[in-house]
Length: 623
Image (cartoon, rainbow, N blue to C red; front, side, top):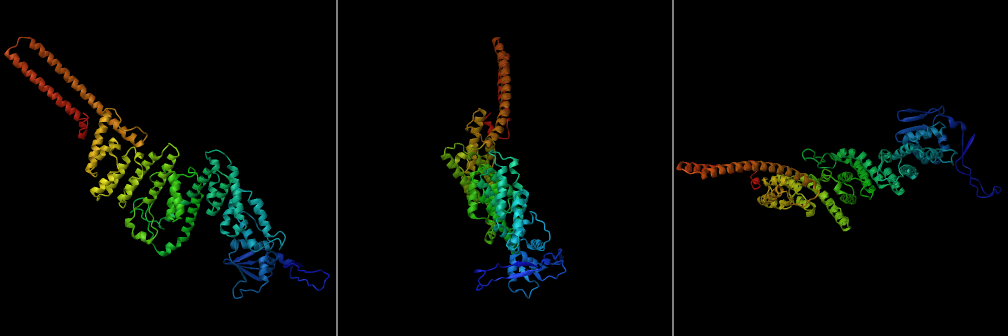
């Protein structure tokens, strides 16, 4: 017979003193019961131990009922032994004991039962965390039996799992369903620390350029849950890894999650897409049941977005502007914390010169019924967000100039703002005030060429034909006609949507530019603006062809003058001879004929000059 001591002997005095009694509470367990089962058989939602001895206890885990023998469990599980000390509480149910929220579920409990019966079990990275948590739940300590399951799983986890990268990742993934046991037993923390140490050891280089060898762990990290990913990145930051590597890892994690987030968002809480309203209107007015079913999922996605924002390194070169704007769209879509959204807008303002117009097209999302009812007054794109980002950029730019950083980026930002204005001008609900305020946000010296601004204004006037004359003049005052290229002037001079006063200013500016172009002068200061160079390149071609036509006209005039001089010489020879009435009358007619021919030559010259560009009468001044 084998004796199992459940409570230790309590002796308060000397053994020879009979006045003190020894409390000895023991349960006699036959040793043959340790090997009474060869395995388990499943019948529907019940598991039975295959044994000749009938089972005497039933335990419910999740929706599975296990019919087993109590003595093997009492021998190794302190929790079961303590339960057996009390009377049964579930006499009216079909089971004797129910284990609520058992870590690892019925699968882990089955493996633990096999261990208690002395049957072989397989420890591997996929189940070691569940067995470690389950054995802790059942209190399978060394006090119950030497070599119990807690010590075995702990040794396997420490010496086998943590020494391997793949095994550590596998265990960390399995911990997603073991909360809070995996966190309380420090399984998650030890896995994250081990992963961070392996990454730091392999990426301990001082090179500024990130190579592919330093990105080997990005894909594995992107498969983890966001709270585990947060622990790993925090540990890496403490170890001093490069901010560029952390930023690249965050962007890779976002790329893995954002596509599914974006597709799931269509039909949740967004109102307008980034294209035309009629084509990509996202309805959120479906049934309340559907809207309620996605609350939990939206909460999880909002947690991911807020965690990524909090993880961003402070260095502005660590994360691209394109990713930041994409993250901002998701943050607005899923109603992230306003404080985090504000911080993200400031961060984008630091690197706004690297953005594109399409990246700035942030849709306007409807989040409540009041917004839906006023949808007719909404704009397709969220202009207020872009206005705040631009204000942050100008503030940072002013600080850089005060710190004697001579290189300014406002010239690059002007093209971006003008392209964005041209995009939002297609929205019929954009007010003239918002358009004007955004266009005038840049200082006057930021734009060296106003072609992009003119294009945006022309688009706005075309989409809003009902503007009054006062509003059209107010809008066109933003544009400086003297900073338009020659092509821009030619288009504006024929634009019927512009006010008459603006057209006159454009014509005057065009005449000045044409004269300067023919004379080979440049009336505007030279700079590196790409728009200005492109517009003047086409103008130079026109001027060159105009000069060729003028040279041909000059050659024809020289030939005519030569013919006239020969006629004059002949006339002098004839005048030296004696004149008769007939000859004098003849040469008088010849002179008149020459004068007439000279007048015809002059008329032909004017016609040749006018043929240089007959479609535009403004070129007559040049000829």
